[in-house]
Image (spheres, rainbow, N blue to C red):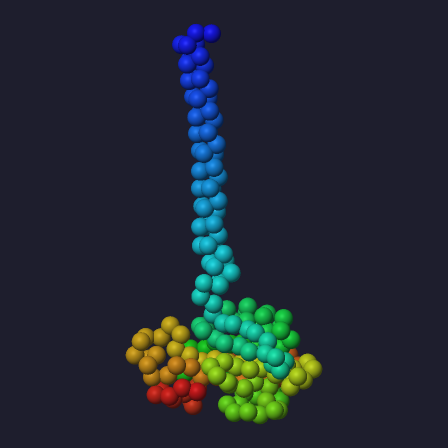
Length: 192
């Protein structure tokens, strides 16, 4: 074999090797790009579909058996009711605009249930920026009814006056839907 033929064969081998290597690298780049694109799509889509980017509320169980609810925005009441049901609490959640309340007569009321201080018999207690619900203090065939009136979506000047108000009670038997009415006790300048 002549020197030129040997050189030509080595050159062909090198070109074949480089072409094959280029194909592998290109495939890896395409595969890596596809994986990166899928990851970026998931990073955008998962929070949008699940609401985890900016959750309206959080539900967790405390060590003492109570269920903690922290509300960030007055939205997703139906989902909150379902999450509470999954945690062992039957609840009816209503979000209202400021100055409004649900008319009385939504069912047979057992009593007001939300307290601000420690109370072993309370169904729900405001504590450290959240609401701790004690499922053991909700009777069988009873529903915890929570009505939040707040400035969600109100003009900025109105939001400075009052942030929100919570009314809570327990109803035995069926709960009728909320019919809104003006709240005569609504006061601007302080929050409940």
